[in-house]
Image (cartoon, rainbow, N blue to C red):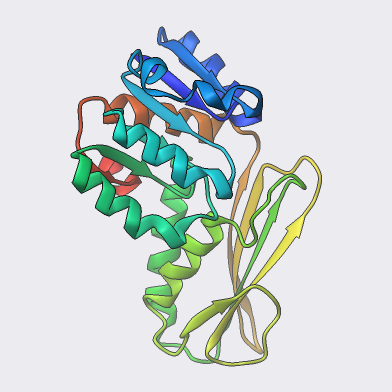
Length: 237
């Protein structure tokens, strides 16, 4: 498999190492200093692109890949206000886009556990729910895309919760998400249900970027030759 890596920060470099160890070839590496190389000529060498950049550049990077017939796996968060537009472009160009807020297999199991717990808890109004997410200080968006996915899972089950809010809240219809940024923390997400007599909490803690990189590489392998819009549920279940 020939890969174009769009974004060559810590995640891109980790994916590069794992891809080569698996016998794949990285034919293009795009960083801030050579973004002009993200063009038709260079992309023509790639079977698939893996995009981990910044919220303000992700959409345009995805469009460039779609225009040039290269399926793209994106893990950039913070740009989802344009996701529907991206899906329309997938259809227009008959291209392929795989998006996930988190590529870790463990996190995606955690998503399922979170939904199931919320389904159980909707019968017990004495429990109040909140979320905390902790990431490294270079994490630009808050709350994280993973936290938003978890919040959507809860809101889909707890009908009395109408929206999430990125701060403490005293409003019963709001789901508070507390974001903390601490140096060298890959990612920790905790959901807590508190009542006057006890509390229930579930936590996922990432120890390194390897789990995210491994999942993104698996998604890239899965996407080669595919058209349409996909997510982790399509690949895993």
